[in-house]
Each structure stands twice: as structure tokens, then as C-alpha cells.
Image (cartoon, rainbow, N blue to C red; front, side, top):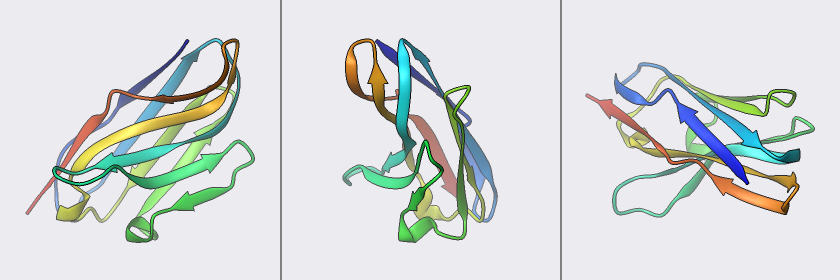
Amino acid sequence: QVQLVESGGGLVQAGGSLRLSCAASGSIFSIYTMGWYRQAPGKQRELVATMSNGGSTNYADSVKGRFSISRDNAKNTVSLQMNSLKLEDTAVYYCNARGLGSIGKFDYWGQGTQVTVSS
């Protein structure tokens, strides 16, 4: 079993910054990809940013240049620095981890953390 614990969401004014963090624990051999997705009310969950264990990144076009993802492979953590936040960034942000553990391949989600950007 793998657990993901997120932290760092909250309320921020437009133009402000927030940092999200996620820590994975459990019987983990290797995490191939860690990242962040978000879901706004009435919308489908969408990719925000992911990073492979080799350091390759993938960002949604809407966040490029504003958000930055980082990982600590040794600690199984991933962070998302969000700058220049916009109203449309308001959503529940979910951490995701895909890898290999004692149970075999896994694909787990965190419980989600709310990010609200106000005008």
C-alpha cells in the first residue's frame, strides 16, 4: 500500500504564490512519475505538471512559466511552486504517484488540497 499526503493549499489573492507539497510513503521500490493534477468545479481532472524520476517534466500550457515542479527522489516527495496565480487556477489539486512497490505497479492519488485564488 502507498499513501500520499498533500499539504500547502489555501486561499491567495490573484498574483500571489503558493507551494504545494506531497509525500509518498509505504512499500515503494521506485516512483516513476510524480505530479499534480487539478479539478475545478464542473470540470474534468486535468494535468498540471509531472516529473519523472529522471527529471523530465511535463506542464500544462496554462501554467508554463508560472508553476515549477520539483522532486526529491530519495524522500519520495514532490512540490509545486505556483506563482502569479490566476482566478482560473482555483481548483482541488491532487498529487499522483506511479511506480513499483511490493504490491506491483501502482498508481495512487492523494486526497486533494483546495487552492482558491481570489480577486
